[in-house]
Amino acid sequence: MKVMVGLSGGVDSAAAAYLLKEQGYEVAGATFRLLDEWDEAKDAKAVAEHLGIPHYVFDFRDIFKREVIDNFAEEYKNGRTPNPCVRCNKFIKFPAFYEKAKELGYDLISTGHYARTDGENIFRAKNLAKDQSYMMYNIEKELIPHLRFPLADLSKEEIREIAAKAGIPVANKPDSQDICFIPDGDTRGYIEREIGEMPHGKFVDENGKILGEHKGICNYTIGQRKGLGLSLKESLYVGKIDPEANEVLLVKNESLFKKRVMVRDFHWINGAPDMPIPVTCKIRYGHNAAPALASTCIYDDKALILFDEPQRAVTAGQSAVIYDGEKLLGGGVIMG
Image (cartoon, rainbow, N blue to C red; front, side, top):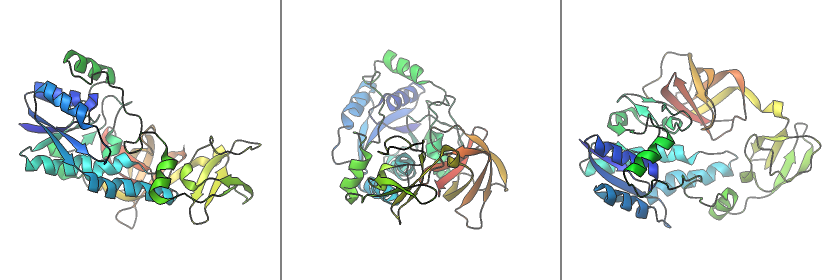
């Protein structure tokens, strides 16, 4: 069978290509051009040459700008904290990639993601510390039979060992830690270049008292304490961002906990089950899935998540993703 692997230039995707080739697949590699300033193809091409597989470059700059970059800036402008990787998976890394692969005669695609699939569903990876199923709740069920995730049961150490033994040139390449289109990690600077300088506004407390001046709402996220630039008598945290009033509400830690979370643009991978349903739910990538009850609302694309115990720093713009055990059921964008 023929499978095309998304080669990012990192060790995970390189190891995925190697393992699939060892399993007897006819493998090709593809690298996505997402930005004008770009050098990712160099390492990916070296991996493909080492493995003796064809290598393609797909130009996704237009769709990446439209669906990921523009959305990212707009969300921050509106006081939300987006997850661009979720958007990229929804529009590019799976559907757009699959269409390109299919045009070239490949019916299967693969990535270096840590997740599992049985051909009908997506499950959490064995290595829960690296599990990336959280980012995949927007995948359409028709795509799932065409996905392969060969890293599902491996640890990072095992992957590097496999790559080193195979002589793969990126075996010891460090992992990328930043958003791919903000490599310097300066989110504020990036957003100001995209939409202009954000106006300063007021920090206020829960009684409406002005506590000081903020430097633009794009600089803050729910639960933040450090970097506020204030001298306060007690520890206060960002509790709410109001883009219309251009205010950032600061609260005590106990005010950051919520049991009820409303979610929009909810996507069920294999259709909505009978409601309500007991689940576990993650409210951000690094969050430990917590027990909850999920139910749909009168609007088809919204859901209500009711946690057994209050969760800290529920953040508008991030995704709430629900599971039945290890199986990914779906998710959506937190409304606040």
